[in-house]
Length: 261
Length: 238
Image (tube, rainbow over all chains, first blue to last red; front, side, top):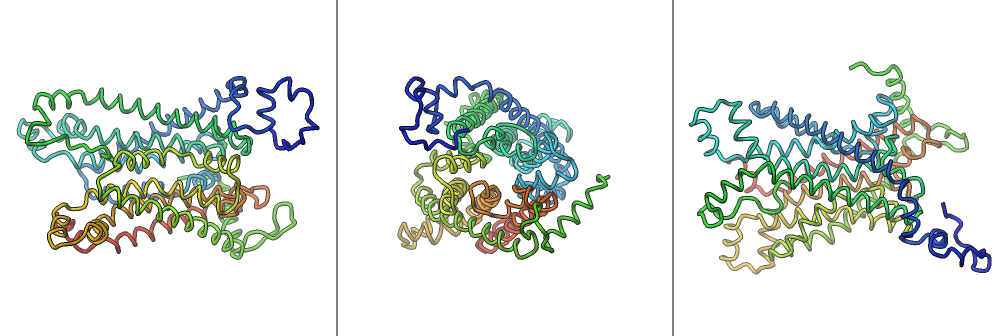
């Protein structure tokens, strides 16, 4: 876009002074040419939408698969190590390699990108669901048993709700990571904001704009998921308030800031 | 699973690329074969090791200090979260557009990726070290430095190693796109299809995947070796 920008001052045309604000900033490869960004904002709309679709679809499918795996291994504990191992292998393979390993099978395109991105989310979400279910206090389960709940009722009405904070924590990590990794989807022909970067790696303003969009996207997703968790766990705060947690001998909530990391 | 007919052909072509030299796509040079693969693997490993060393040198002492003092929890944890949100491609592009390319700059950029997981895990590991063991160490007259390095650090070793594994995988994955910034790693096979052809691209993907998996397995073994016997016993009993 602006590779040959090292013209000596004498060679610069009159337009250098007449249109100083935008053209010269772009010509000098300024760190952030605000006027250019305002004029070209529309070129980022489609890649941003593609990026959003990549993230949402991958995390949604990943959550469904990880959830099904967690349910399958809940009463069959022996399944946990192989599931962790398999998702761990998927998580370890670098995304770029993953895209190109899939290429002979699924070809270039959004599907390939989504398969690879989905595979990444599995380990994080699965591990957090399993940990969340394992951390439900035995007393609580005994109480559920005591009031005559079946295994299924206990799972859906007691264990999963209690594990919710850790499950959401897993989805948050997976979503934020996927926002970042999806910028590599361009190599698989999957579009997204990576296209705008790969288009011209030396264009400073472009790099900054894409970086900002990605940061904002990650923050917004994270915030929405925190709000969702608050909404879904209202009962827990109600019961905390009723018990007077903080003054009780249980001490502060067993939930340090880094829970679920 | 029914694979497309061409799949096995592509795969055997990739294997052939790994073991035998061949002319490049435009025919001017010889590419592929174990010799070139070894060269690129070496650069890939050197870059990753340099970045990991730099990351450890910064994150480990900082994490031990903050964890031992119980300070900067917000910082240590926020760093871990922010680190996850750094897009590799933006990082490399930032390097190219603002800082400059080359081995040293890439090392710094990759170290930036390595620091957050190591810092967070070191902090959490040190903080969560068994308080009774720490009190006992103080009781027998250890200095604060000794408590941190001889009691808390070994107890935190497994947690720290989890962070090191995450960091190493991120670094190796990102070193794959280093050729964009001028340092030729194994990622070059993947990124330069016009030189290596489709079989070279697939071979590169296989090699990068194997390198990452081998690193993960090696570090997992190291993690087991670094876990103090006492901790293993405690876990076996609980």
